[in-house]
Image (tube, rainbow, N blue to C red; front, side, top):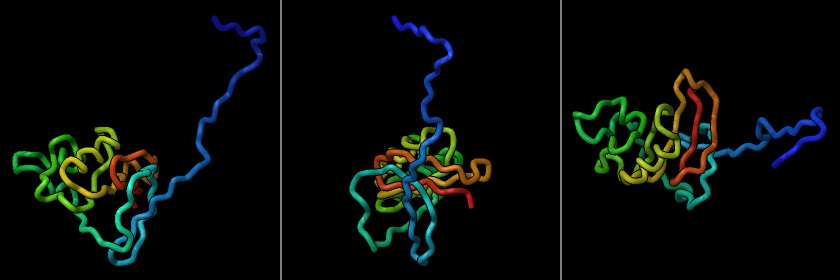
Length: 138
């Protein structure tokens, strides 16, 4: 049993976090997309370029709707198209870390999780299962 004998005393926890977890994405043309991630596993080989594929172009079969593959939903990606690539997944619907699991299961080496216009520039760093970065919509 917990008792509070002084009702005017409150306990306050942090409502925000004052830490950043930068995970920038450097593209082949030298441009940099600012992102965040809490991935702590093995990094991709520095200075080695990996091909990108938009998840919409990696649907497992033609009967799969683009909406499912764009969100990197379970069983939506074709391993033949994804293997060895970094996959661009749209944020929304299914859990962010689950999207990375789908990419990894399909043979992808990394993921860029991008916001739509409705998400804006709000970024959330997650502990992904493969090298990944969340980036804004701009």
